[in-house]
Length: 105
Image 1 (cartoon, one colour):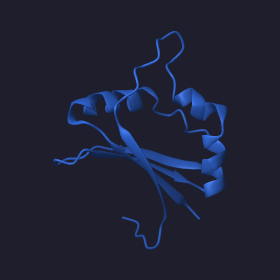
Image 2: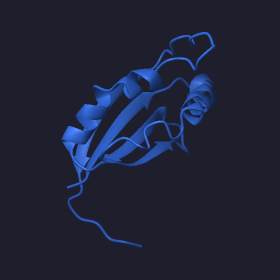
Image 3: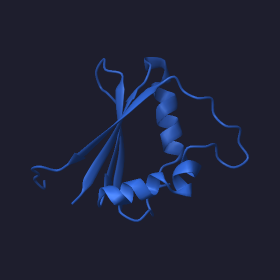
Image 4: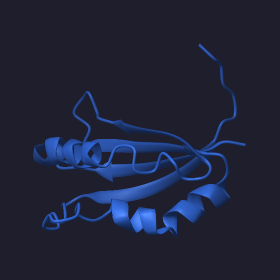
């Protein structure tokens, strides 16, 4: 059963472009991990400041294995030869869901 993990990031308005840039720099980093099914970074289109990092996994065990992996740690640090980026003043909350009802469209 697919598990959806949503990292809800509260991002100050002036930091939105930097959030998008940092995620774009790591796009595809998790693609080959066992059980990974998909990724989306959702940017608000209204006055909200919550960005959503949505990942889909075959099961919770696959997600937990990725979080414990070296690739997770590698994806959260600077690329080789670059200085580590300054921490961003954002808050994060992890949500977990399964699909209750769906339609293909």
